[in-house]
Length: 204
Image (tube, rainbow, N blue to C red; front, side, top):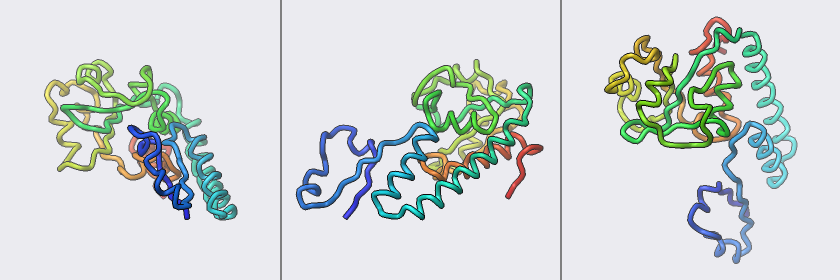
């Protein structure tokens, strides 16, 4: 019998599933991935341990095809048209986002945009003044546990002069496909791409 756990489960414990292991249960630890290459590796690994190589190959081929389609379109977007993006994971007063070395940063860059926080690394809390100074063209949020997160960002004190706010380029992005580092990220990538570059990406 198999159970899958991410590295978050091991945050404050050395082996919380020892009792399961002692009963003969096979426990598989799958770390949270920060790269698209890591996601592909997980697909191959799971297909192997679940004895489903053909299903894994089909899933991986579809994932690769969608990624390649997005990359091909992104390559046609001139550098001067690249949009600058702030991706908000948690809202004020404790804003949370990410920089280089995160899968969301790679998602943004993959579709031909720039993360305004790419000069920082990993996942971190953000000061409002940092975003004001960065002045993104677009703001995305996947915080879906409140009423109207987009309006809350648009109404945020001190942000009125940010380009994304002034032009009302603030959008909610599907939380499930942008919160978990697995093959479903292509849904969120396409959603962002079509918002940022409607003349290049088309809805399917």
